[in-house]
Image 1 (cartoon, rainbow, N blue to C red):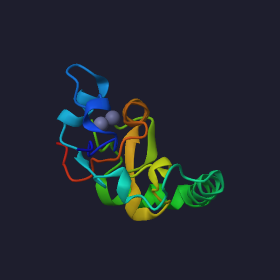
Image 2: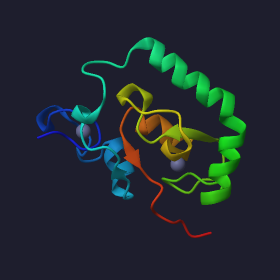
Image 3: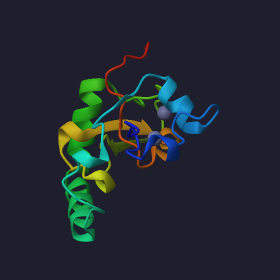
Image 4: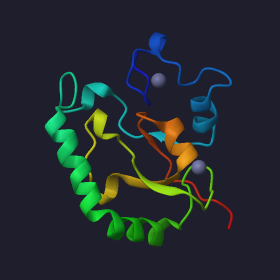
Length: 130
Ligand SMILES: [Zn+2]
Ligand SMILES: [Zn+2]
């Protein structure tokens, strides 16, 4: 079976290994966004021109999308609740076929964003105490 977060075969995946950064990230309750790499529209890797295009779209809309996401879910990291160093993160990463659209974005702090890397994790569903 395939890991729901990274899309690798279970035995090659380290997502839920005890004490790993990804495991502590996942323990907060983020759910797999798109369960399988196989669901991606691309057979192998996302073509570089698609990556460039999606990054450019994000860059162009960054300020207004940031304001939109922060207005809807609060200016906090969707994973840990931190309110500093926030960045827009692709729930389904571009590298896994994700697009730069408002409904594929969440706010993460820089630290959580680094841990999440290319995993497909939706943290938007939980609430943090103010
Ligand atoms: Zn995994
Ligand atoms: Zn965080």
